[in-house]
Amino acid sequence: MLSTLRVSTGRATRPCSRMLQGLQRRTFFGVKNPMETGEGGMFVTKYKIVKPGKAGIDWDDFLLTLPSRDQLGSETKQVETFLKYLKVVTDHEKRPKDFQDFLKRAKDGLNVEADVYVSTEELLSVMWQNGYADKERTSLQYTFPADYKFHYPELAVLFDLSEEDAYKYCMRVRIEASHIGQLQTQKMKEGGWVRDHWLIFGASIFMLKTFPFFNYYFALKSFGTGMVMWTSYTAFGRYIGDVVSRNEFMAQQKTASDVMEGEDKIMAAMKRFANDSSCLDKLASFSSDMGPSMATYRKALIDQERHSLLSKAQKQLSNILAFEDSTSAKLQESIVKEVKSDFQRKFTGDKGMQSAAFESALAGIAGGKGNDPVLGFFATSLKAIDLSGKAKANAAGSVSERLAHLQAEQEKEFVKTFYISGEEAATAKKSGNEQSMQQLYAKVGYHVLGSFGLTEVPEKPSMPSADKYVGEIADAASKLGKEIEKKRLDSFQAAFA
Image 1 (cartoon, rainbow, N blue to C red):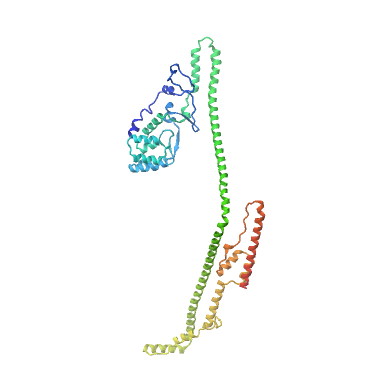
Image 2 (image 1 turned 180 degrees about the vertical axis):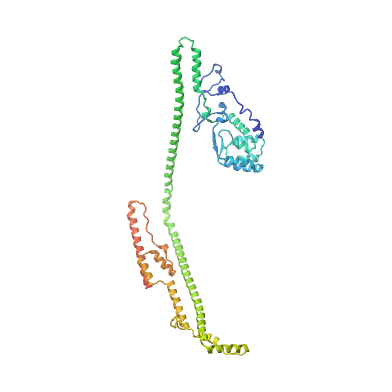
């Protein structure tokens, strides 16, 4: 393939003279020269080319026009698939720099001449002619669709060629196929047409000034006026033609847009009724499907509420247990502190106890057994402590009375933390706020079955015949909800009155 691309490009871009281009230019009238008449002669006729409209673009046969590079129409091409394939090829051939350069060039789209390309079938054919393996041709065939266009920059980087050689090869293939491609309108128009008009006028005056009847009046008045009208007609004709073509193209685009928008609206309207045929089938099986589903749903809902109720009760009991453990620890600490403080007061003011303690200590050092008044005091004090609750609470009394006072304070704190007073219940009832009730329930660790609560029917646009029914249902639900809430508040207040 490399040899084909390099060798077969010489004649494709060989410059042709303007005369040769003029001879090859297609005429638009079926006129024959005498030498062309008869069987086998040339006959060029006018025909229409139907191609997509594009501003500033003409379509013509490359074989007849032989366009130069700057006359070709361009486009921006997205090459995501080609980049993936090129990455594999360049990694295999150890050409990472070529891939990086091409990626920088094509990351925002590859700008190419629209009709300088070879198709997938043409590329596979030339690869077979140049001895490429079946594996290489198969990989390319299964990667790219049959209508993919390999433009010359892609061929150059894929087969490690110069872009000039790839361009010449692609142009040769397109010219041999008599391809009808895009050409820039401004570049294809012949320039200097006003100059040509007045060159004709000047040459005619110079050649015909000595002829009879070609006097001043005819040459400067009639012929000159005709030339001015011809030039003006050509200029205005071109301008009006461009305006008419542009407006016609815009009208076609607007019509196509309206048609597509209408089709989209029709399709959207049809989609709204796409499932109407299955509604009756679903309604017929609704009752049979709804029974088991509702039973399962109710069971799952009850299990969920039961789990929530147990978890809240367990959490509340855990809090109570933690409070009791804290109270027991405080009681033990208070017993030690109170007995210690009582001993310190008595030992400091009792000389006899001090002497007895000193003698008991000496006897202990001598190895004898003495009556220790300190141990006796602590044993007597601990036996005298009354924790049965019969002792009178007094902050300045005996040890038992002080402990009873401390225990009474802890009980008040327990009631304040885990009980609801009648005042709190009355306040919640008076406010009539659901949030206040939720706070009271949370304080005692009770789970409110909120999943079974009734909600008001939301107001939505409906048929007039259904408004009355919906209103009655909403009123009944609201009335029932208020009755349930009132009974709940009354029973709750009565329990803590």
